[in-house]
Length: 310
Ligand code: CP
Image (cartoon, rainbow, N blue to C red; front, side, top):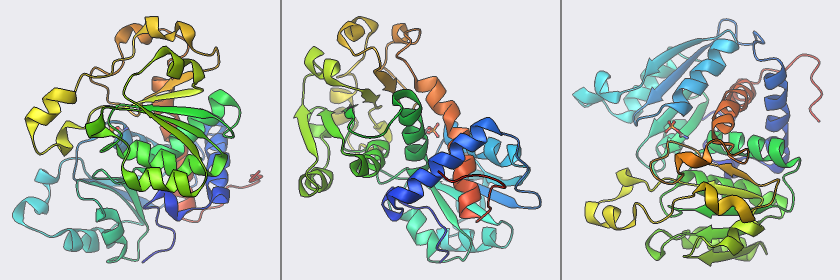
């Protein structure tokens, strides 16, 4: 196991997060720093992706490294029955770092147990998506000027949405207030509500995406209902269109409020929101390159020359 792996946002301290954010800022200012000369990064995507894979690969390319990997496991020997263990052991022969997405919860953690190459979790089932969380934190910090004492409203699929689970675990270090807006079937899982209770974090649950909730929010974090996690398609059909943010709903919001969404969206944000200055989801995705440059260089223990960590 390599201790520089990044599998869960819970694995790293508040100080680690602040250092990664500081690195992300550096890379936004110096995107083409050639710090990965001679390094190879593997991107193994057993599940579909647009943003995560392409922003990791952009990050490596901008850092001067090389990328190998696959975006579709059916083109790999997984389709012939090769196990995850054997795949990870093989790729460890070729790469200095492995970025992987897998549909099984715990797959990235398992990978760390079969290799000495650092593993970065690019999403494991409904569990965690820690690199998304770093770009979310970076986006919140850029738009709000602070991570402290913010009211974060999470809307939609709070049960299966791994991005909201990771974000909750990260934001708990910064005295947040949470508003959870979902139908009962997709409410925030008990383990995360219990963490809030144990740590004295204020949260409230709502089935109505009301003007009162919108007016309180510093960040509205919309999520897609995760069709791929439902075993019963009828259950998905019942809940898929329950919450849609429309431009007319934003009149009551604070001037500084910003809307985030990990994307892809389906119907959760009406396109009429896109031109509102409070819509930040496309810039948020762009921030993914800088956050992932930070994660890659940290996992490979590459110092940034002349960079003040604070
Ligand atoms: N946000 C996110 O994980 O997007 P992709 O599924 O396109 O990677």
